[in-house]
View (cartoon, rainbow, N blue to C red):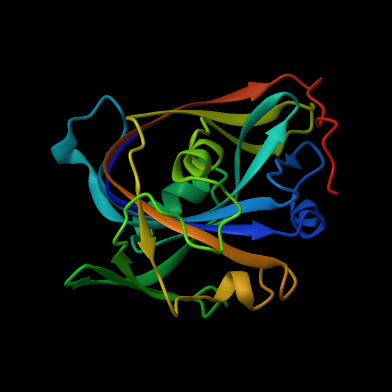
Length: 245
C-alpha cells in the first residue's frame, strides 16, 4: 500500500513501563528511553491511499489516527498498534480485514488556524477515545517543550520516528506478523498544543489514569509512505533482555 501523509502530527507520550508491558503480547517488549516507554498518537491526513501498483488518482483520501507503541521484537525495533481510528468506513473495514491496526470508525474535523490547525475526533461507537486539540507552530521550530524527556528534536525524532517495522500477532505456529515500512525522510518541526485532550490516554481506556504523560508534539508534511506485504518472522524470536525499571 502507498500513500502521501499530506500532514502528519505526532503526539508523544511517556508511559510507565509496567503499564505499557501490560498492554503488549509476550513476543514484544517496550523500548525504553530514560526509563519510560513511549506511545505516539499519529494523526495523519492520508492522500491517495491505494495498492502500490495503482496510480495515485485511484486512491482514497481520508484521516487516520493510530496509537502506536515503540517496541522490540527480539533484536528488531519497531512499533505495534494498540488502536486506530479512521473517518472512512471502507478503509476501516479493509484495514480490519487485512491488517492488525485495530480500526474503529470516527468522525473528524480539521479547522485551519492563523498559525496552525485545530483537530477533533469522536468515535462513532462512543468509545472513550475522543481528541480535541489546537496546534500552533512553535516560535522555535526545533525547540522541545520542558515536558520532553529528550535533549533535542533530533534525539526525539531518532527514537520516535526511525521505526521501519510494525509487529502484529503471534500465529498458532509461533511465527510473528510483521509489515516493513519505507518512507521519505522525516523533517519535522515542533508544535504547541496547550489544553489538548486525549481521552484514551488520560481516562484509563489504554493505561491506568496517570500512567501516561505528554512529552512533545511535532509535525511533518508531504511524507511519502509505502507499506510492504505482510511477512512472518520465525518462531525463535524472543523478547530482548531490556525490562521495565
